[in-house]
Length: 144
Image (cartoon, rainbow, N blue to C red; front, side):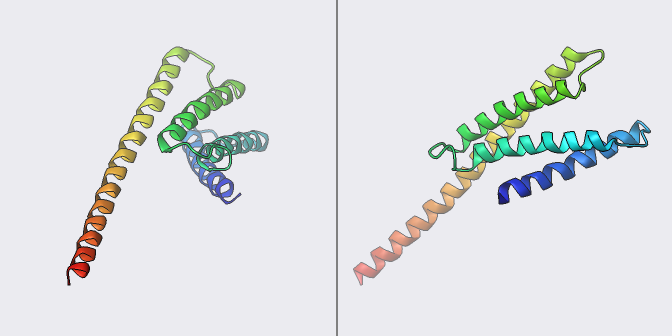
């Protein structure tokens, strides 16, 4: 529940910032309460997908890369469903917009994998160094 609360707070905050910027630049003066409620429910669904993918409640043995892949696929389909159900994809250039969306998702996925691999390599190096220091200290103690 803590993950769900924190995820919802984060997503709603960023979504409202984006929505306010969108309305400001298009000079839209109001935001419908009904639409905000729908968006809040929609965002909560995305947070639930995140929680299910990254907590060990449902999937116990998967590593980060498999979880990230599942999450990116599931949340992408969920976002597509939301865009279609809220009629956000209407208008010209729809295929181009979907291709841009797919490219953004793919680039973010690759960036996430690269960041994770870099972080894992750094943590592995720190662990290896600490293990060597422990072995050296242990050898010194036995030698004395």
